[in-house]
Image (tube, rainbow, N blue to C red):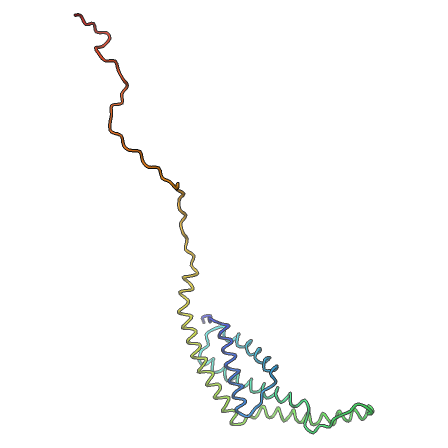
Length: 215
C-alpha cells in the first residue's frame, strides 16, 4: 500500500469535513452541541485519529466504514457531553444552604438531591442510545456527503502527487560537474616557423692545407 502524500492537508480536510457535517446533521436532527471548549477538544482528538487513518491511501469501503463509525461516535459524544453539561444542575433540585444544618440534615439533603441527578443521567443515556428518525436521516446524509467530498478530494490529491513526483525526483538528483583543468589566463602565441638554412659552422675557404700549388 503506497504512502499517502500531503498528510497534514488530508488530515485537516478529513477531520474538519467529518466533524462539521456531523455537527450540522446533529443540529438539524434536533440535538444540541457541547460547549465551544469541548468542541475544540473533540476536534483535536478527531484530528489525531484522522492522522492515523490518512497514513495510506483510503479505499472507498474503508472510507465508508470510517465515516459511519465517526458519525456514530460523534453523535454519542455530542449527546453525552451536551446533556452532561445541562445535567450539572437538575431541574427541580432544591437549593441547599450549608449554614444552620446539622450533619444528619446535610447528609439527607445530599441524598435527596442525588436522586434527580441520577434519574436525569439515566434518561440522557437512554436518549443517546435511541435516535430519532430525523437524527438517523441527518447523520446518514452527512455520511454520504462526506464520502463524496473526501473521495473526490482523495483522487485529486493523488493525481496531483503523481504529477509532482517526477519534478520532485528530478530536483532531488544532484548533477556532478567535472572539474575543469587549470589553464593560464593568457596563452602564449606559437613562434613563427623559420625557413630551412644550412647552419653548419663557418669553414676556411680555399684548397686544403696539405696541398702545394706550384706556379
